[in-house]
Image 1 (cartoon, rainbow, N blue to C red):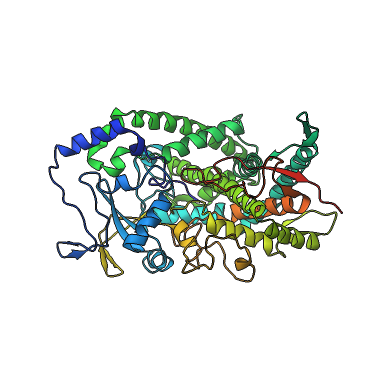
Image 2 (cartoon, rainbow, N blue to C red):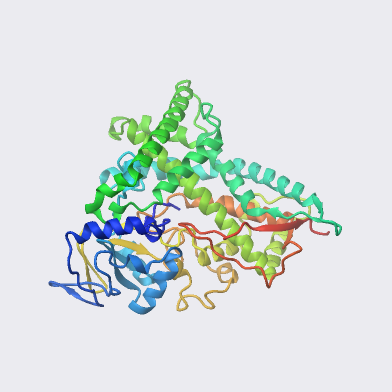
Length: 527
């Protein structure tokens, strides 16, 4: 669920002709002729993976296009195979597009491909990459991840927020019910008002995550300010710096103002973190029990003592990653997972009826869906998994980097090669999935697929030691919210739409949702 994939970000080099001209001019001072690369070429004694022909200087950057890079890379994979090499500027990048190759990278050679590219904006925002997500692989990273997994995002800690989730979802259902009872008069008579389901999903997710992360101890900081700060941080983390693809042109980031913007945001972020940290330290000093994730983190650091060897900056780095993974990745991917699932169910009403029938049979006529009851169902979870297969939260998994030279499928992979796993392509592989582009939740009803990355045909949240540690937090909320919406209400398109005209069109960006907000009409089911 992380969102720091620099390739999938809004690419500055795609639309800034002036910046591209500067890059080309500067590099041209040093480079006169660069030969085109060909498939399966040899580099000295090394045999590199096949590669599309590249242009001088910029390599294959021109082939990525403006958006939906996962689609472009799938087309390239169809021509060059499930393992091929791109040159993005001066950065060699290995693209993996099959489950078998992903298993080799994320399992068999996980110890080799466990590095993380430390992009320019991440270094400026995250205390020199002293967080879990971007930290260089090694003992210190293992120490930080252990704290995150054991103390912040463990199954036991996720369970502890059950009451919070259920209360928030109950309030969420009340909001939908109020909207369902509203009518508008357009001159032709009254009709039911459409509900912006997309916005409701975002609001619900932020409510749950903000309370879980900070509780009520924000030191006077408005939750909206936290949301805005995290979104500003996210936008910078999604920005490709020129130095990320042309390391020798570090000065261009200064000239374009990216460095100044990063420093301003870093100062604001640090100020917010300092206030939140001080507020929690005051309460912790009074001996109160930990009731949110920041309390957990401070307690873990205190109990670990000198053995953890963490200073205040390390603590802030952990705060950033835990809150960023929840606020940015958690909110973005959780809300969009719910959005995609609802959109697919509306587009496939027979599948929606199957989910509703199971829920209403198990829960009864006058109840509500609790997590305990939800654990006895199969179809709500199957619908979500099928939506994740078709619409992976982060279609290109967070990039990895080879920490040493290695061999992969007979090819030589040099150290420092970046690796992109096309989870979107794997989820739609016709050799792995029957009727791969169709929404068929039935395929998950009688199988034991889970989200943890054990089966490399289904890796929406990655796998291996760099996989997402917070899967349970987001999926539990998505399952509960969707189950209650489908139990309490029947859903249909507004009066001016029909199934034939309703299209599920992807937006652009790192974690694509629907291009337009999902607006539906809800009504209470007839007894």
